Image (cartoon, helix red, strand yellow):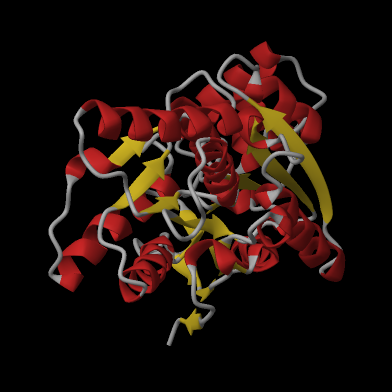
Length: 339
């Protein structure tokens, strides 16, 4: 006969309600009691899936490095879509920002979520802890084994950007990227390299540059552009004739550096970003970019949480399509859309 919650309560000398709260990681218990109940349930072979909770409270977890909405408002739009989808489905959303030094377990107990949406990069240790909570969890703009995820079609977006630059006659295209630990950045870097291969063009690996850690996004991208210019001049080699940056904030910072050096945009050097934040269209010159339905990312994340959780997560991402909009920073105006 299968072990019941009553068996666990009797073995732990606690009430059935205490067992339920402990196995759902809900507040109201001491950590020692929670750990003891979980251990006894595991020893008895109790299937905690029997306590599957109807999803009502959903926590949107964002790493501290992503919450500077004034510089890069990408995740503020994702959050808007997430909150709208929650309201439509009568879910109660909450937002939690965390980093590697924060006590995530304590914060999760305070939020007491029935489900969790993780947006953007987080450390593997945080993902491992979230997996141990046995809550429905979805990753947004991130991918990891054992989790459902929704992502931008980053490789396709990079391909569209590069196709546009090749069509404008650009051949020495630099890529300014951030840490490849970020799934979306790694995918955009892959798309950049793949575009050269697909076009049958020679790829100069010295034109792919990674921003330095420890600097703000603006300063890091500006520093990367300064290094590209300095290296070209030191080696008496031609400057890049275009820059594809991993996001719009980086592209705008790099473009300001070139303008300060007296370079003409797009005559001397063209620029393309990714994400289509509001500042892209408002810059001088306006920035060509890959457009993303950021709200759709948040909405799709909620939909995935409400899908049947009994089946194992698919190894394939749910992808949100992208489009390309050409503006003055790269020359001729044209729109390229995904098929």
